[in-house]
Each structure stands twice: as C-alpha cells, then as structure tokens.
Image (cartoon, rainbow, N blue to C red; front, side, top):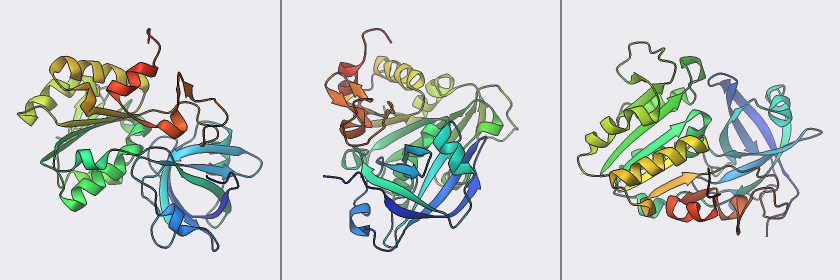
Length: 277
C-alpha cells in the first residue's frame, strides 16, 4: 500500500514548452525509495505536492532512473501549477507515486501502432513513442498531434526528435501553419483518413490521449473504420485527487480512474461512461 506522505524531491531544471506549459526535471532526494520509483511504467503518473498550495497528478514524460531523475510536462491551469511556475531550480517539493495503470506495452510490441495526442494530452504518450523507437520494437509507428495554434504546440523537442525516425503529423486547428511539410491545417480527425491510408492495413493498436471529446470521437470513427474496440486504448483524467482510490472524486461507475486507470481500452471504458456523452 502506498504511503500518502510525500517523498522529498528537488526541482533540478525546467524550460518553457508551449503556451503556458513547462517541462520540469525533478530528482528524488537522498533517503527516497528509488527502487519503488523505478518500478514506474510508461503511462503511469505521480502526485506533485507543493507546500501551502496542494497537490495534483502529472504523467511521467521520462520515468525515474537509477539516480532518481524524472520528468513531467505541466500546463499552468490552477493553484498548484501556478505555484509550481513560481518555483526556482533547487527548490524542494514533494511527490507521491508511481500510480495508476500504464499502457499495455506487451500488446503494443512489434505491431502497427497509431498514436494520437491532443494538446498536453501528448505527455502520457511520450514514453511509449520513445520506448518503441529506442528498441525499434514496432512494425509501423505513426504519431498525430493536435494543437489549437502554433503557439500552443507542446513537447516540441520530442516531436522534432521523433520525426527523424517516424511520420509525425502536426495538426494546427486554426490553420496557422508555417509551411513545414509536417504541419497540417485542421484537427487529428481531419487528417485521419490520410493517416489510415498510409498504414495499408489497419493499425493493430491505437493509443489516444487528450480532451475526452477528441478521444471518444476518434474511437467511434476508428471502430466504424474497422479497428477493434479492444485495440483502442486511451488515457483518461478524471479529478484524480488522491491517487489511491479513497477520495472518490474520480469514480466512474464501478471504477476509480486513479487506480483502475488512467489507461483503459475503449471496449472497457464505454461500460463506465454515461449513455449520453
């Protein structure tokens, strides 16, 4: 059972990574149970704790290493994140985790994989793409990323790196593209027919993360196109306040998103959603 007492971490460095977003580098302080943190899996998350401000969940963009270093993307949205953006390198904060269910990496290996992320929703998918590229553990891999405008594009370093190895479709909703051959006007849904045609055969696995409306709409489209709902996975965020299934804020019928998720198959997730959505 996880302790609700935060582990001390140090803010090592950060850089701006899109509109009102920063990529943070943290390190576990001496005395932390590094072995426990190294058990983190791609797609899991941690609770970041700021004194006098509260705590909030964030996904790992880089899992904890043997020295306790880990990374996360944070968008400035409320009290906790606003306070984090005021911190300087060297500050000591707190963290709990790792929590939740990660991506089904064994089912993804050596498959035709389509990855779709919207806004900061690409963050839970960074580890998947990095792992597959590093291990060359895929038959085909394509990433589709959607942002409201060019200023809002996040995880720029990661996407630039990926483009050296795999197709990356960067969608700009307001149409303000810069002529780059990887940028397209519209949303991930708009480019989907082109992306699916590029696979030749249907993707074996589809991973979605971002606004729920985008994910649900794409899932329904993909199923209608012929992709099995068992093969579509998504990362869901639902008011995860505690991370251990005690507060009930993220309750979805018989499941707690914080412990039973945040990763669900589309086949499974539909059982826990309202009939009208």
